Length: 230
Ligand SMILES: C[S@@+](CC[C@H](N)C(=O)[O-])C[C@H]1O[C@@H](n2cnc3c(N)ncnc32)[C@H](O)[C@@H]1O
Image (tube, rainbow, N blue to C red; front, side):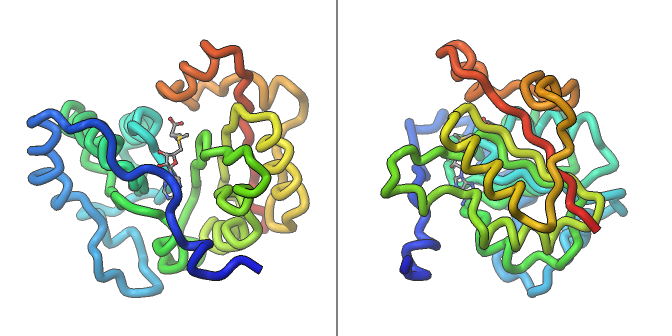
């Protein structure tokens, strides 16, 4: 039995190389303007994060350097985005992109997403992205994998009927794990009709640096789309 404490521990890295001065300025000045408030009432309605009304709210879990989140936010200005990422260098990269593109529809949780999943109001999300989650290949580390029954139950509660969950992986073993969990979960339906649907990058699914490296290393990414059933 895994204790609550161990399940909630974050095993990834939070810091990397020393940040350039301009990125440190962004963390000091821009992040406080778009960071989720620390004292969030539960249930938390994410629409209150945006000054103007938004058509929908989409969540990206583990946005890495933020390339995908920036692309989606620029392509969908009427959608409000929440991105969660504990790796400060990744957060700084995202902030640089937000600053450069003058995007106003992204809010950031520079931390582990799991507490937020417990706080968000049921049915508040129209889409969630979990792209290339850490595969934790060793069997004894499988309990660290983000795709798990408790997380899928929580995402099922947050995504409203008809909403989409997108998951990508380049790890064949994790792919099997992800499909086993999602195909067995009563709230989700895999929308792929043939191999093309998960082997070929959809037009609205931009490449990230992580994925470019993966392809260069000869790995085959899978692009998985699931519908939250009503
Ligand atoms: C392999 S990287 C992929 C990054 C990005 N999605 C991409 O495709 O380029 C996985 C990311 O998930 C983040 N991550 C892992 N667990 C997380 C959690 N509980 N909450 C938020 N982010 C998490 C890690 O910090 C890491 O940046």
